[in-house]
Length: 197
Image (cartoon, rainbow, N blue to C red; front, side, top):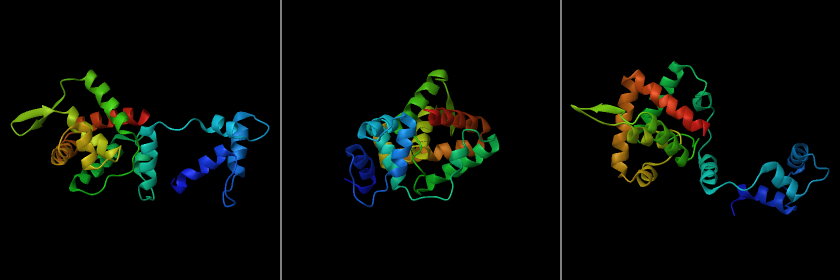
């Protein structure tokens, strides 16, 4: 079992190695539950049941990502429109093949947010050459890349398209975000919904 998982395991077992500093966790659990003495049940009551696999994967992805000094995503939900636009253009620049940012939501959260939004506006289409394409599959790829932090291979597998098709959709998204304020607003609204869960 990876070392990062050991602390919770030791707290729920009631014993652990000498290097594990337990007092602040135990004090917090006692404060939250009102219990008079710490036990594994106190820990579980204070900090909850194990995460479902999708949320566990999100936590693991955040742990694996190299740390950054700050990420404007933390302010996205309450950000001013200009700030949201700049953030989306920066994220859209990831179409050049650089690694995505932090995983902030699960892939399922991105899917649900897109599906709910698509049900409200099923006819949303975006220009491509002399014709147009359905916008929601393009935005789904962008959310999976920007907010879920998935690789092209993972996005392809989840959306039943090839990695190159995922890259093309993301490149289209980049153009639409950079050139159309209405698309920026739609992306921001769906991102907000995604982040809210």
